[in-house]
Image 1 (cartoon, helix red, strand yellow):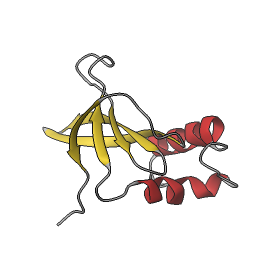
Image 2: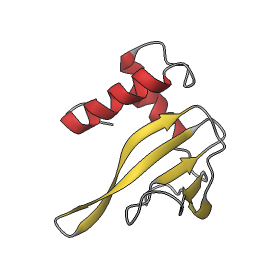
Image 3: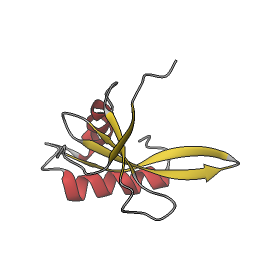
Image 4: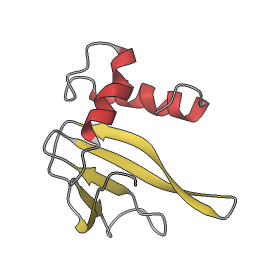
Length: 103
């Protein structure tokens, strides 16, 4: 959630407006660090096959909350962007992987 992108500012605002209480955010500027703290190695990577058509949302479900990603195809590469974060930890879906640190 870098502050350089207009799209990331929209998602930071959405997370602040809708989920500041359940994520225990005290200031708008806390959004990136709180979301980063949710991205824990070993968290479950879920796909909800009942939603989203071809671009199904990916959910990183942790013991502290969840982060929702969406797939973007840019210049032939597949990238994922954060679109939301929640304080709850019980998203439905099928576990397809676990998050690992980049090598």
